[in-house]
Amino acid sequence: YHPNEKLDSYALYAQFRYNFSNSLRATVGGRYTIDDKSFDMAANILGTPSINHAKNSWKSFTPRFVLDYKPREDILVYASASKGFKSGGFNTLGDVSQPVNVFTPESVWNYEVGTKSTFFEKRLNFDLTGFYDTYANVQQTVFRTNLQTGVRYPKVENAASGTIKGSLPRIAWAQNATSRGVCSCVMPTLDLNHCRFSSTRLINAIGTPQTCVASMVTSS
Image (cartoon, rainbow, N blue to C red; front, side, top):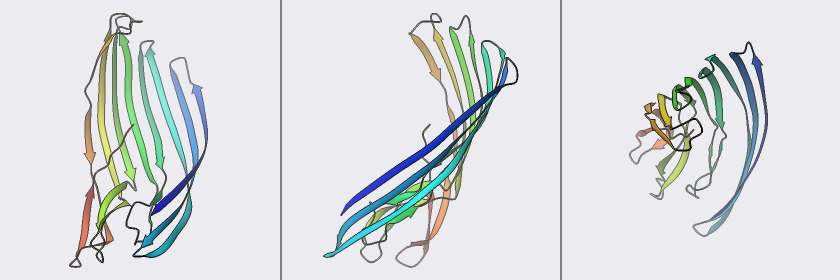
């Protein structure tokens, strides 16, 4: 089979910043995204030609809020909340004898607090960040079995929810404020709450519903 997929993505972004004082300011931003996706796929199933076609559009508004405070010129403390969005789509790499797998959008709320500071005439940098992420409809690739043919195939499904929390301390030292030679140390901690989901369509050979435990893979 020969899938042909198309994506048209449009976005509008705006950000506003207000200074309450010389040391305290607030930032509010937002992004409105429209993802139009479509696919055409020609397949040959047991000698019978087949053509699949579908299209859909996913939209989302993702805001961002930040409050930062500088008690001194060399210390910054901040807190933020922002939403992320990954549009739905079509999985055309599955079993061609089955309907094309359609999955829904995934979203995440990220909450973060931290500090950025410099000492000793900007030779020592110390950053500390704590974060908490809550995911909804996590997109996860799992493998299913076609009970008629016995073929295993990949399928993208949506888990119910999941969370990630952790901290990220960073220390960096330079010979002087303009030096390019920097020695740094990063010591992250991470706590991942796996996503658990089940589907009434997951039926094994003896008719017993199956449950899949899926872990999230993220990048930032």
